[in-house]
Length: 167
Image (cartoon, rainbow, N blue to C red):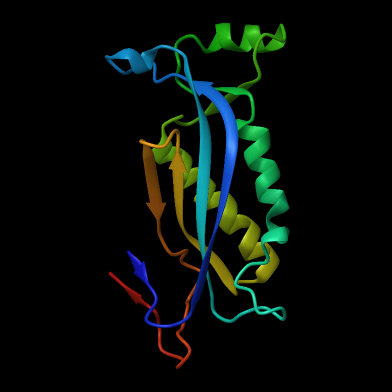
């Protein structure tokens, strides 16, 4: 896990993304279509603060929030290998559902996908000054999954110029 010895981190929470999905390979009730209102928390780190004194200016995350809304707001998520994919695509074409095909709709894969999205945005925009080192994806108050990693291109240092510690 990424632990700063010294330095700055922040987090941003996004919530209110009602969607449904199914885990077709699950032997229990999760193979049925069911829904949740997903929420996500992102943790950020910076080598140095920006001109306003921020790790990440939260208003600059609007493109990320749009990706979240487009992917998860009133959508139906299915795995790319779902044997009913053709039927789901047909229902999408008929306007019965707003289909999103994912590698895996589970919260673990979702957290990793969102970590990638956040770091693509930050690397391009901040040229390596910032990174997203952790994402928590929740399908409800009781169930969450986390993905954490420091991107290979982010080499953080603490305020004394020493590298952050990783465990």
